[in-house]
Image 1 (cartoon, rainbow, N blue to C red):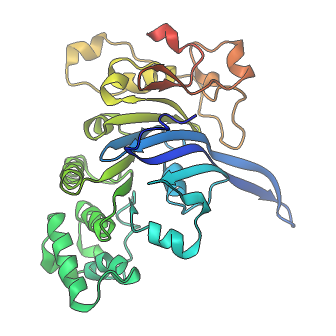
Image 2 (tube, rainbow, N blue to C red):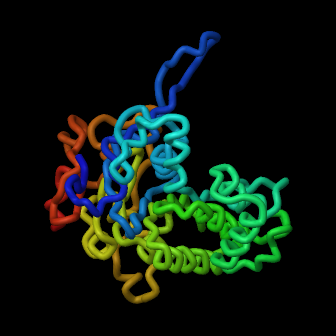
Length: 333
């Protein structure tokens, strides 16, 4: 179910999105199963807001981002951006739509072509989409580098001459080149030093205010997501288990998995930190190629009962704007 079907302020609506990767074996490469990386995800992103998408490694966060951008063609579901269903677009129509949706990739070391200068990297989208030519591209590149607080004279240098934080700024400049309205930030700070992370996040916030950008911010660092996000969606094994405003989610998490995640976040007060109860989850995350029946989280859940194995809990609105996929969420109200 969608979290908000009627609001005209909604820029992106994701409805029952699925992305299954086939498992093939044998000489004839027959399909013997599928990795259910994303398995029925629904959410909305409003104009100008930042939706944080969190969860442990391998839960399907990055795959969700790439499937929204149609870098992977979804197995099922809809991705509606500004009233247009991206899943149905092909060729030139999809290429034109990508001007409005850009992505900042996780690894600043791998996402920049080492054989291209910074000027070529940042200017490439302008040339590919015929937005600018010749000296106009150079002017735009200089302006973009200034926006991300890099010296415009760096445009003749190559990626290996920069630190991780500077490379990520180059990635941000490249994402901004086509003046998009929506940017998917795929763990943009996870590969950076802690001291640099705050600088990049602050830069993203400044740019959002300046250009009225909308972000889907994918990360596994809950404290950083709380800092930058307006609302937070929690993902586990290909499904979203909880979605609420950041303050509501941190003050009163209603899903056992969210409670376990938040109990592991360090807090600066040593007395309060010593008093609170840590929730240690049992077992390992099941394989997305063979997920548990019913509720995905039931094999590690401290309150699981028989019904959890029989059917999948509905992603429902427990309180205004607070959605949870748990049969027993009311216990925590």
